Each structure stands twice: as C-alpha cells, then as structure tokens.
Image (cartoon, rainbow, N blue to C red; front, side):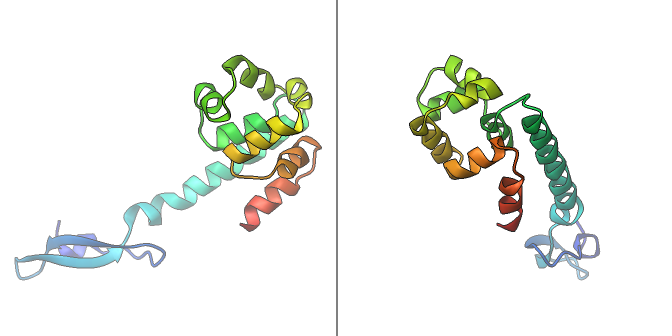
Length: 139
C-alpha cells in the first residue's frame, strides 16, 4: 500500500500502518482506522434499532428481558444455561414473558450477574419502563 492510499481522517481511533513511502522505503505511518470511520456509525445504528425492536417485543409481552439481554450479548441458549448453571429447558421458559414472571429473586440475580447489570434494571424492562434503555445510553 502506498502512503497516500493509507491516509484516513478518523481522529477517534488511530492506527499505525507500515506502507511504502514516497522515496520507495517502507515505514510506519499513523493514520485513522478505515473500519472505525466507515462502519462504526452503521454498527451503532443497527444496534440501536435492534434494542428498540426488542423493547417493543418486551412491551407486547412476546419475549422477556432475559431474551433481550441474551440477544444483545450475542449468547445462545446453551451458553446462557451454562453461565447461569440451569437446564436449557428452564432458560427457554425464562425467555418467554410468562415464564419470566415466575422467576424468584435468586434466579433473577444470577441472570443479572451474567448480563453484568442489576436485577432492578431487568425488572424495569419487564414493567414497561424505558428506564433500562436510557441508563444504557448514558453509560
């Protein structure tokens, strides 16, 4: 890659590339990250739309907050059951809104630990409050 082709204007994330300089030698050049400049905004927009659609499904009582966090953390049912240390069948029940409502505080705390959040935040999503999303945006 030539030096002139490597220059990307992206002050958020800088990288060092080894490129062919004007004089024919190879050396380091500090420049912006191509991926950050061109794809980070797109990723954040898609993630925001995913969160909003999952919140709508929670408010319609189609899925539970456990499902919301599982999807956002990109976990499978098997991975989640292993982390919470319960059977996959129980996790599947907890992904449904009716099954989630039957959770006791201990199980809710286990899910909160796995998702690195609080039990109150999980419950606030279930109650129809958008407080959980607003807290996440402020972090």
